[in-house]
Each structure stands twice: as C-alpha cells, then as structure tokens.
Length: 115
Image 1 (cartoon, one colour):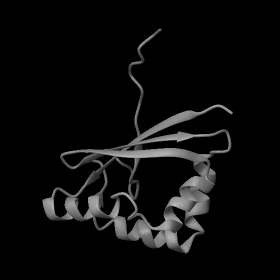
Image 2 (tube, rainbow, N blue to C red):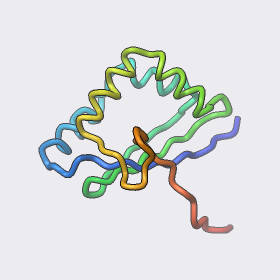
Image 3 (cartoon, rainbow, N blue to C red):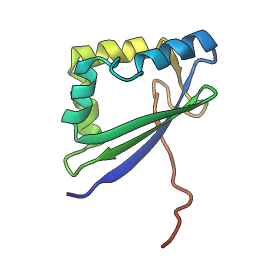
Image 4 (spheres, one colour):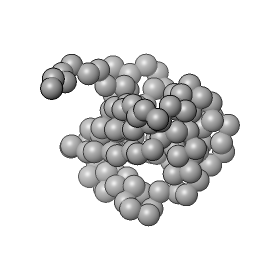
C-alpha cells in the first residue's frame, strides 16, 4: 500500500479566545468520535493540524483508497460531520484567495529535498 500526503491551509478568526476554544475542540480525545471515524473511513491514515498565529496547516497521510471527491460526498451525507463543520465555521474563516465557501485550501509544493 502506498501512502500519499495532502497539505492544506485555513485561517482561524484572529481572536485569542476563539483560537483557544478551537484548540480545545482539537485537543487529544476531544474531537467527536463520529468525526475521527469519518476521517479514518475515508482512507486517511494520519492527520495533524499545526497553528501559527491564526493560520493553520493540515497534513494528511492517506492510503490508496482515499479520494478527496468521495470524502466530500461522504461528509455532505453525514449529518454529524455537517454539524461539526458548521460549528467549526464559528472559528474558521476563508483564506483571502479562497473561492466562496471554500475553507481548507491545498498547498502547492515548491520544494523537495532530493536524495
């Protein structure tokens, strides 16, 4: 099985209280079990989110079964995921260059250390 990496970015609202609340939702053991299940069911084998200021970076490692379109469809049809996503919009905001309604934006790889 091969593993691929996807990297995305998103902003939080620049408010220290909201950022602290967001971090608490994502602290170990606090993410809703339905959310972590939906992530794993989509073929995401590992996911980490990093924060600097109010800008976040999400790194996902996925297996051969992962399809971003299929994941979006699965999420759209899962009421608990939709509830989570609506809640997260209270904390997140679009990047300045995002399309309307677009939250997490794929990063463009510009460098890789060659062996």
